[in-house]
Amino acid sequence: MPSSDPSPAPAPDEDEAAALRRALVRRIATFDGPWGDQDWSPAVLAAMEKVPRHRFVPDVTLPVAYRDEPLPIGHGQTISQPTIVALMTQALHLEGSERVLEVGTGSGYQAAVLSEMLPRGHLHTVERIPELGARARELLRERTNVTLHIGDGYAGHAAAAPFDRILLTAAPPEVPAALGAQLREGGILLGPIGRDQQVLVRYRKRAGRLEQEVLGAVRFVPMLPGTP
Image 1: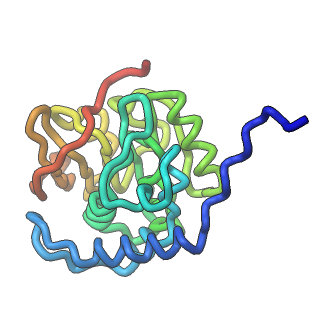
Image 2: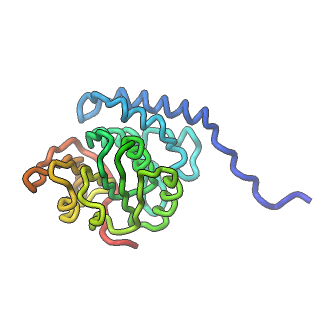
Image 3: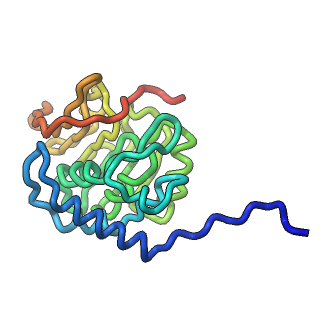
């Protein structure tokens, strides 16, 4: 009598996935958008080519997983467009030994890319939705330079502060005061800011104040306070 259990999903073709990543990175490397020509860091492009995006996107085919576009991951959230992930990673000006805070783990994809960029550093990443956090924690569990926390991103993670870099992957109307306080003097805070109209802003902390540089228009999900 045939089993009524469904057949297991076929394992993804890792050779095909690697080829799709290489093609994606070639597209990213030719980006010429409103932020101007990019003098791409080889380390950023290498990280984008190494991280298997398909593992961070549930229930899509390999070709869809490697489209250069945002995709839903459940709970009203998205995984960011790969070019935006690369641009934001590059804009952090990482050297490899920084202590970094990411607010909005989501799928864990951006965290995985940052992990590749921090061979001597450490990433703390905060997710407010427990179900997303649990899934991302499993995907990131072999990355010993990443620590995931479930909590309110507006509060940051004071226990590990100060941070050399802070990255927001959702858009608050303005920089939460706690995050500015947790940024080290001379550090960089990068994130989308605004409600209906958003811009990506890079802040540098000098003499205790955040000096801003607007990098370009973006569209992210809103950054919400508290936890569900």
